[in-house]
Every structure is written in structure tokens, then in C-alpha cells.
Image (tube, rainbow, N blue to C red; front, side, top):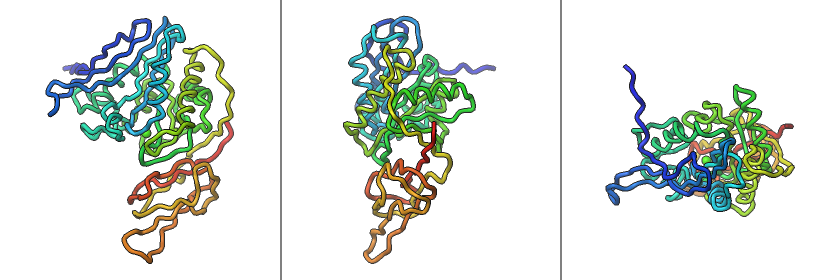
Length: 335
Ligand code: CA
């Protein structure tokens, strides 16, 4: 007996095969207290002009990361069909309920979209969004760019990244696009928790997948917003979808080769960093002090670098909890 996969309850108000510029929605029926027959409306734009590659561009996979949405709402407003060879699908707020609430996960079901893949057509709202990307949108794409930043709890050096992959041709194409994106830093990424990620879903379908971490703290700076906007355009040029020349920009390549790159808090408290993002640290250097806050007169806990490198990411809020990732030290490499 075969079980047919249930179809998605999400419907698109656009025709993905039509030439021209379309602004519309992915509509996901969501019955709730304030709207019995309500819907989650995920805005999207499709810009298509004839045959050619498809780029799927997403922001707001986590709802408190803003460079991607800024770059993609801007691009959706500006892009005309004659600019494009092929198709660009722009979804600035992929997990729209999380984006609207300004939270990493969805307020409807607490779903973390980037841990929900491949999703379920009959699952939670977040699982239904994942399933639609998995079975409808990713198969249309050749190139996938998913914008991230640190959100409210992390802050990153601005970087574009791809993963080390078993398929070296697929990996090389991804790193070509990372180079074209032209962020100040470029990273060969090791995921500490790859299960359920959109990244993995795209890569498993053979797509050329590129991501970013462009700052954080629950806001975007003028610099990181500009990096996102310019990088997106450069990537589309390198993918032969937009015309133009990719400007040659210096980028510093970083690697996060193993678990020693990550430092986790074993104690809760008030964090005082001893170094700032971009600083060079030696193995054993003090990265941060965690001050106990229950009483005065207690010595702080000293967190030291477990390897030499560049201080690439940090915990953002002033108070840390036990188990929080406090610091990431990356290694500069030639590439
Ligand atoms: Ca993120």
C-alpha cells in the first residue's frame, strides 16, 4: 500500500511561471481565537523574464534578524522584469509570524523554522511553512540565499558563508557565490546543530546554498544593511540572473574547524567582554568575565579562548544563562 503525501494547505497568490513582476502572498489557513477563518500571510515577490536560473532569496527565517528583510523588501520594490534573466523569488519574512512578533521563533507554535525541515503538511504552522519550502519552493530553485544575523541574543562579524559538502562541485559553486557576495568576512561553516535546517534541506536537493550572519543584537546597522543589499545584488550577478560586473572586494576567509571554536557558559551571571568582535586572540587569552550577581564579594568566572584566532561572534545581552554560547573564535585561512 502506498500513502500519497498530503498536499500543502499553503496556496500562492502568484503564478511562479508567469513573466513579469508579481507581488503577492503565500496564504496559510490558520484558525485561531481572533480569526476563526484567518490566515498567515507571507509576503513574496516573483520577478521572471524568460528562461534561466531561479534564485530563491529569503530573510526572516528567524524573526529577529533584520538585514535580510531590509535587503529583500528593498530588492522586491526595485527589481523589474527586464533586469532579470530567469527568475527571482523573494521572501523577506519567511517565518512571517516570528518576524511580525520580533522573535526568533513563531509565537503561534514556538516553532524554530530553521530546525523544522523537512516539515509536515499536516503539522504545526511552522512545520507547514517548512514543508512548502521543502516540496514546492526549493525544487524550483537553482541558487538559494538565506539571510541570517545574530538576532537578539548573538552578534557576529558580518560574513557570508557556505558549507563544506561531500559534493565538491556543489561546494565550489557555493563558495564562488560567497566570494561574489563580497562581505567583509567569508566563512567555511561547520554547523553545531545541522538537523532540521533549511540549509541542509536545500543542499540535500543539490541546490547551491549560501547563507550569512551579518551582525545581530536584534537590529541592523547602516553598515550591515548596506552589506546585505550589495551582497544580494552581487550574488545575482554572479548567478547570471542580473547583468553587470561583480565588484572585486577584499574579504577575509574564516574557518570554524571544530568545537574548540565555541565557548559556552557553565555559569549564569553578568558578562564583561575583554575583547571585541574582530580582535585577534591567542589560546588562553581572557575572552570574558562572568560576574556572579547574587551577592557582592564573589570572584568572576574567567572564560578563556580555547584556540587562537579572530573573535567572530559573541553573546549579545548583558546577562548570560548557563549553557549559552558566549563566544566564537574563528581561524583566518587563505582562500
Ligand atoms: Ca539565525
